[in-house]
Amino acid sequence: MRIILKLALLSLLVNISVCAQTKEKSIDDKILLDSLYKSNKKKVLNFSMKEFDALFFEFFSKKNDPNVLLTKTEFYNYTVQIAAFSDRLALLYPDQKEVAVKNKETWLSENYEDYLEYKASQKK
Image (cartoon, rainbow, N blue to C red; front, side, top):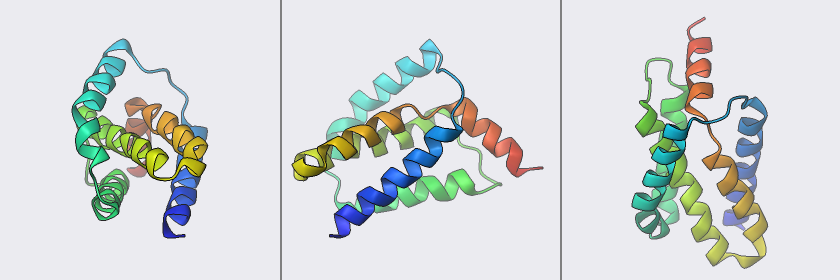
């Protein structure tokens, strides 16, 4: 039951994030994402829920802290790891596979330029 609630929360947060996205990623960003995904996937598939929770909340704490500006690599490293964890959830909970796939796609579609705009709006 706990995992279903986390998936629902994750899905809600992802849907909110998708609505705010406006820009297409550059080729360089796509290459960076691919590289980060390949280098993190195996590690993330072995995460416990506790490790994932820590990663997830660390990302949102840093993202929402007006005094912290993540680099492009840091930002994408978080979003890629969160996306890759969806692969684990899809394997562990086959009945939730569609939600996991949608969450993965959404996290991989996160855009650093949108994040920078969000950070700029925090300072106003």
